[in-house]
Length: 334
Image 1: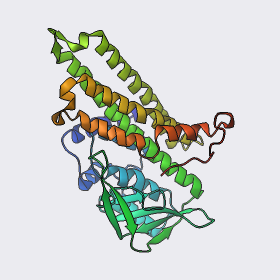
Image 2: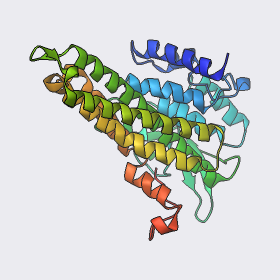
Image 3: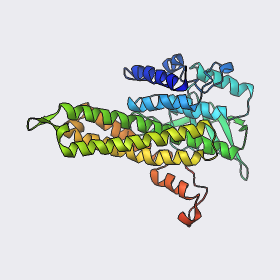
Image 4: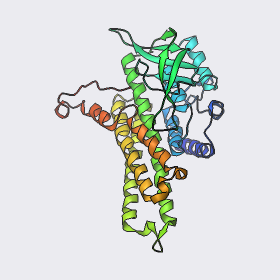
């Protein structure tokens, strides 16, 4: 089976499963999704971020709630970059088997942490004064839920209540933290791409059946142009996400640039696509039952989370001194 065929099969299964209900931790483990990047020796699939990206896109399409982003994308991703130890390996195995729900703080502070209230273990990326980053594994902490615009996501402000274990990165710690942030940014870009595709398809379908003046509104030139604009946004976003995922999988030195390009463009485009979908659905689009609002709210959080489009554009421009006078060349964000 080729990689494309594998991804098509994974996408088909994910669409069928996620279209019914939000899977819990046990269901995600049974599907094998929690351990996609976990080595086979630790009960995982030994796959790559490319397969994770397929699942993430389908979760965006279905506006799926649950622990996947925090546990599999951030949690397993962080553990995979640490020095191998029996404790780390045991935790990875528990993640793959659905026995441990993780949450990760990448800013070394309390921050707004995904899935922290329900987490069994919190991984905090911290930094020694004058030294490099490391990870603290904490089993106890007070998590205060924080309301956000997207009701499908659970974020909390965390206060650490125990010392925890200190774990080191296997390679350059600063590069590892940058790569973790890139993973998070691309994950949200995948999610935004999926929800954009769903909104485009739903809008085109609606425009084909909704009639005004005896004609389907999809026959009106203004509606055609609006749908065409949505298609352009989605198509460009798909190529940028593909390039970013490939760069991460290959551990390309310029993966951060590809990640920022995808996050900046798709993050903004998803809000535009969902907003246009709401407009073209007319009064129906503003009703609670239509669920268009769910996509727009999720796109809005995705756009700001782990760096706004403006922040990512500054990050890219910082590579070119003539274009980024006075900017910080080490731009980063939690």
